[in-house]
Image 1 (cartoon, rainbow, N blue to C red):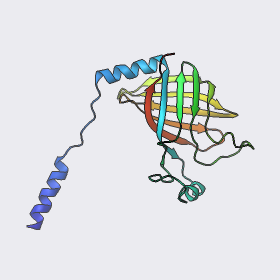
Image 2 (image 1 turned 90 degrees about the horizontal axis):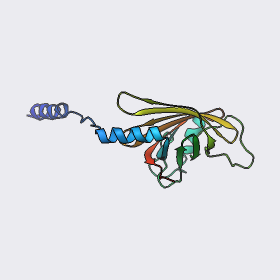
Image 3 (image 1 turned 45 degrees about the horizontal axis):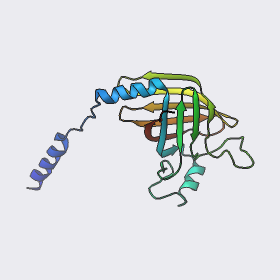
Length: 180
């Protein structure tokens, strides 16, 4: 009798298909417009630092808010953003990870703060109707390569590679910038 219930349980588990997310044409068109205008803002919910032994020790010390681990840090309630308006970029992204060099004495560059012009902006539409955007930007004296993936459901994923920091990724929501 136990084997019968086990068989039924397995049958139910394997017969349930994972539902495939369906993207509407309206969502695709909205994302196309956002990317074409180059005017959007990303608010991150999570930061994903590259985990090294030092980062593991610091972030596992209990100093982070509940729900965070050394490889996934909850940013809800923390001010953070990355905004693009044409060829201009502004940002304030908290940074968690190791620095290689070039640390300011006053600690003013602990976050990744862009305020200027982005370079080599490339936006490519993918088969799943998402967009991959890449560009270069400067925060204080540090250069970054930025890779953003925007999805039709207005979710975003960013990866930033700096020349003096280890790579960090962020995930969050895409907001259309209000018209000036």
